[in-house]
Length: 145
Image (tube, rainbow, N blue to C red; front, side, top):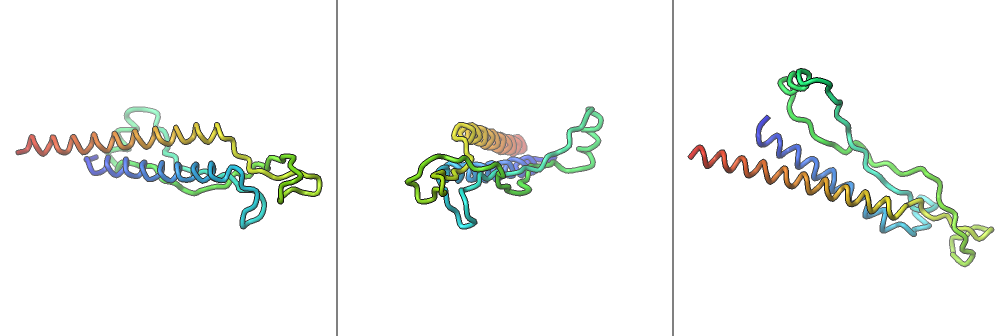
């Protein structure tokens, strides 16, 4: 493993968390959207990250690292939440059904805000790791001079 591998892993993490924050922002922006092109209310979107298997022992980790390069995170797909819409009584709304209920997106504001804080902290951790790798590379160059 070298400095460039760690920088590549951190930059992959930055890209994944940026996509996650964009999806969360879209969810928050559409929290009251009752009509979409596909029909019905907006459906919450979520990023699915690829998981790396967990090794059990130090020997397994060491053997794996000697054979393979550093792994990084990857967004495998973006999925729509299939949870049913929340039915809200509002007979004056233009999208109300014959009983006066409107299908609202099933988006929880607090859950989205917690997800945004988590994504932001993960993004910041990747920035810090990237800065530390850069600083170590610069120090190594200074030592070599």
